[in-house]
Length: 285
Image (cartoon, rainbow, N blue to C red; front, side):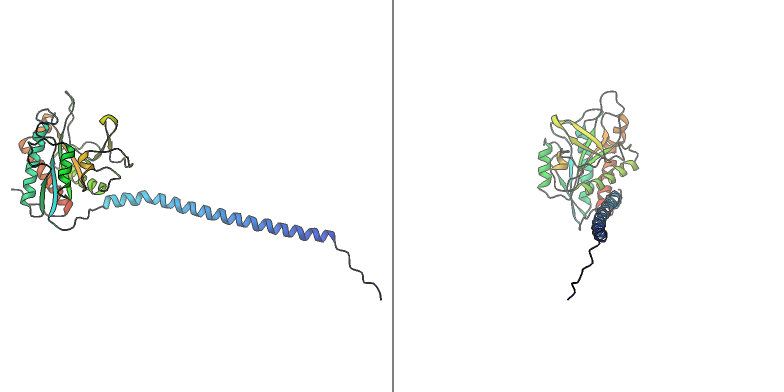
């Protein structure tokens, strides 16, 4: 029987086959790497798009924000800054005189309006009470809004004048509502001729070490651990502290700190409260 002979393998053909397999493996690996890179790039673009759109969405929501207030009657706390043995700032008048006169006029408007239940942070404006004590008194009455009334001051020879107010700072539970109310107050004061200090009359304030105050404009929205005014921090509701005029400025006091000036400002505060809660203010007598 004749012996069969196999054709000897072609070494060159084997090398080509191995080369093709190796090339396919390399190509497959490159495709996987490329797919992974495209996925990462897609995720990067998606995240960048979200971050790009976030500020615009925040700005729109802040501009269009309206508080949820429920049904009347609404509980509004009015805090007259200083008082009793604490006169506050001194100038053409004492700060406690301005705050007491304005608070009394505002409380009268609220008492006459059936939509509101006016609350006080102490029984008498002549009673001496610390900010912490007044905050505790307000909290005990479960207010839905708080306005703390103050007067400003400047060094001798200064011509500083104008209105500014301080809402609860960014990061606090009631910041948006407080900021909304602060803008209403500032707009009302501007309508009667008050000069607005800072950006639109609304600023933030923080206490640093050694009770040093740091004032920042409302464009600064970073959440910070430092405390602001006690009445803004320790009462569980939207809250604003208003510096309605400089008690050291004759013209400011004449328009916004005199007996008639305090009544005029009280009406502005009352109308801002009505706008906040969506009620119609009582007509001027």
